[in-house]
Length: 108
Image (cartoon, rainbow, N blue to C red; front, side):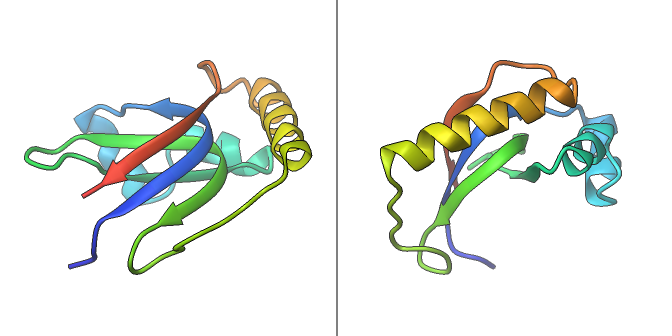
């Protein structure tokens, strides 16, 4: 079993239905395909500590932090602004719905 982590992503977070989990497993979900074609990243997992709670993140992965991942990272304000602008533009071009945000999500 992997240790817990913190996922940091700029983009949109989508909560898939149970019927969509198979497509996520196969990496064939339409939102994953749209993200790849737009040059964006995607990350999905069960984020529920007690019961299943799946999220799919689409956009730019800032980092995954924890004992088995990164322990620190830094970026300049200019680089962060560039990431926000480029990611927002790609999400719009790919017609991925939702308002982009900086997501910090605990992964138990």
